[in-house]
Length: 143
Image (cartoon, rainbow, N blue to C red; front, side, top):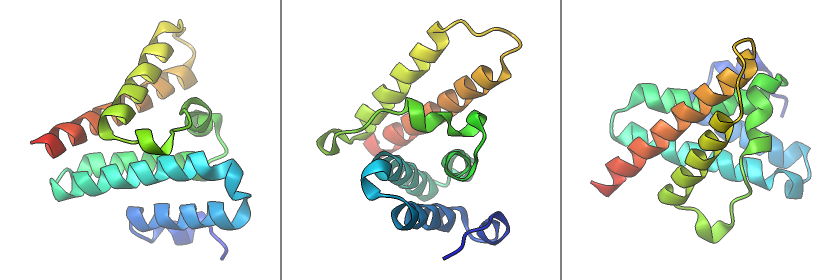
C-alpha cells in the first residue's frame, strides 16, 4: 500500500490514523515503533470519546496533531515522538496519560524559551492543547 498526502487527505481523520498505524507496522520493525502505535491508539481513543460528546473541534485537533507528527519530517511536528515516554501497558489510563502530558508541559515550560524560538513555542502550544483535550476527556468520562 502506497500512502501519499493527497489520497490520505481525502479520507476521514480517524481513517487516516488507522492507515498510518498500518503503515508503521508494514514498513518498520514493530519493536521500534510500538511507542508510536500506543500513542496513536491513545489519540484515537481520546478522539472517539470526544466524538461521543460532540467535541468536534477537539477531536479534529488531536487527530491532526498526531497525524502531522507521523507524516511530517519537520522537527516542529516530529518532536513529540522523542518527548513522549514509553508507556507500560498496565499503566495506560486517562489519569496517567494526563499526568504524563502535564509533566511534559512543566518540563518544557521550565526550559527557558527565547522569543525567537518559534519551534519551542509551537511545542508548548501543542502540549497544552493535547493536555487540555485529555483533561476534558477525563472529566467527561468521569461524569
